[in-house]
Length: 247
Image 1 (tube, rainbow, N blue to C red):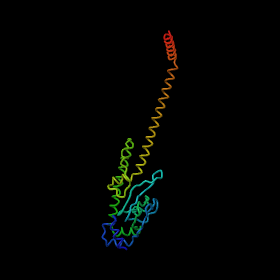
Image 2: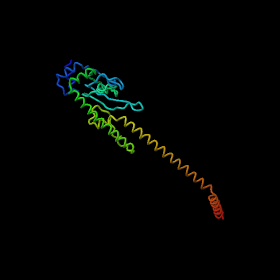
Image 3: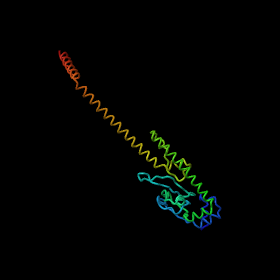
Image 4: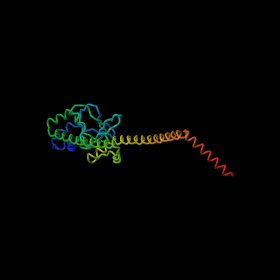
């Protein structure tokens, strides 16, 4: 059994550079957990007492927006590590992790993790590389969100036509960020819908105002002595014309 776990650890980004002999010692401290689709692996705010290495399946990392809705901030799959931040800074979990499919993870407890870091500095280096990759992705994510926000401010909603469904294999960081910002797309569509509705109301109100103004101007014109005299002269001319026609 430890040999099987060691082979699985070798597929993990965190441990892939270690020789299989070293991984055998790590495997002694690892347990296997199976997570069903839709189940929660960890919750935001919980104490972090272990890290997880995804062996099979995919997970979404989520938090909540100001209205309490789900906001997907990342997703992770085979070979990637989840939950190591809480083991390093001893702060509560920063996000909730939910399985996108039936999955299997390798769990390493906090004390065992710290022992391994003390004994193997090269693992610490692998961990730094993993953090660096996440930081790069976060930069791409933020840049794209800012770019779209600027387009919204300018009234440009063309980018919403490129919405993509969240897939398990997202390709580049740019593709992944676009897919993960689905909540942003939904917000933009709501903003555009409200904007279109407001424009229609303004146009309708403008027509009503114009109609009321024309009516008022008509009443002001027809209420003058000049218009009354003009109307009387027109009546007299019609009467004279009718009299001439009868002769």
